Image (cartoon, rainbow, N blue to C red):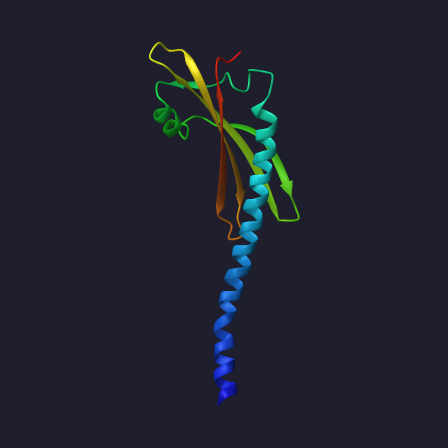
Amino acid sequence: MALTIFAIGALMLVPSLFAWVNANHLSMQRDEVMRILTQAEDRLAYTTSGSVWSTAQNYSSFNQGMSNLDSVGYTQWNNFDRPQLGINVSVARAVVGVTDSAGNVYSRIMRLRGTWQGPSGATLSATRTLQRNGPMP
């Protein structure tokens, strides 16, 4: 009788084990995407060329700029293969400029978005946001 109860209990743990393995794999993928976005951020944050930052659409307030960043057309920047995790990450960027009432740009905000196919086949994404203050070249 005890063996039967143990066997039923063990069988109930099998679906939980598969869910845990999928969650762990997804976590490893997300960590790798965030590492890729951090590398992209390091390259773009201190670029001497203003061209990356000068493509901004202008918005008159910080909150409007942040909320409208999702509606800005993203520029495809690069593709990154991570065969050990079974993913291909696409990185895209979008920039908005935050202006004062006179129309002078006093800040620019860039969002980097990485997208990839998750373990279940769904398209997943992660983002990082950078801000650069002062006049832009």
